[in-house]
Length: 206
Length: 206
DNA sequence: TAGATTGTTAATCGATTAACAATC
DNA sequence: TAGATTGTTAATCGATTAACAATC
Image (cartoon, rainbow over all chains, first blue to last red; front, side):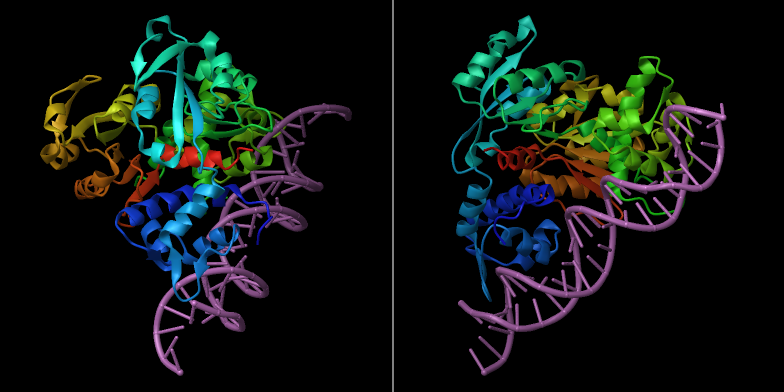
């Protein structure tokens, strides 16, 4: 099964598996079946087995998956086996929330620089980081080898921030601004927009 | 095309259309083609036409779509033509960010109550709302006719908060906690988890 | 009229699920 | 051995895209 191109749907499920496996490991559970996983994560067990099989044979027939071994493998697949330096632009409420939220630290994502365009915000401390002005962005992210950028600025500024990230060599962007941003093909962009998320929920009201 | 069951993928694109149409309206653009929309939103024009056609014939052949008319129609489809009262639990950084972010106000989503389980947070003011204790949740959301609940508490508390929302009659939940929550079938739940979002991005690094 | 663009059908593409031989 | 569970193929299901007649 190796060497196929993997669909985004599969890739997006891997962190969900990882999160739950970490939980199991903490609770000293050593083995888990696709059945168990499927029940807990609301997914079809066949789908879970298939997802994992794209990357190797991680399970044992009749037994299931070794929790810690699978954690290690998924970390490798997601490239979370070494620290990934992340930069964030937009030191507002949301940016602050993301910086302070350190749960992803144990999975090797680390916010190493924060920027803002408002003079009043420069120099402020957020979770041991000083907010830097935008004109330092390019140099700083190159120096720190930042590979992923997070955008938490208002919609009007988002495209410009993305452009600066790209110019600085960032390989992937997570955009929280409520606007579709254009980036070159080689840069990966995900949109995490809770406004659209919330509005789509309204559809399902009676 | 009416009376079909609409897939979630379609429903999730409607708010994206709405957002861009609002933008066009503000710029006094009166007409737009599926071509234009597709280019701006990185979507296939045929897909946009098909999405809209599920709900009616909103366009004019040879012309395109009337921007303001389409806005009105999508608002109706998403049930955003009247105010939808929303409650939020978890007055941390993220909860605060969501409360202060009022962009969705113009599309009729309104956070009308905020709760937290920490004694120290009770009574605090967030965007004109006083943080209330959890034991007031059920009564308050019933009184205010809250229909959607937002969860921004730590993972360990999330299921319990969801249960209380359900008991209070909420019809849909947007969960930001990094855990899969179980709710009855008649309640709609969306997970908005930036940790998994960020980790899936790592996969695409070179 | 000529050009543009919709709404919709048919074709394609891709993702999910069922089923089962292999095997622990 | 008997029971359980994987990895994988085949079947199903669903979503996207292409194509085009209708028509503004």
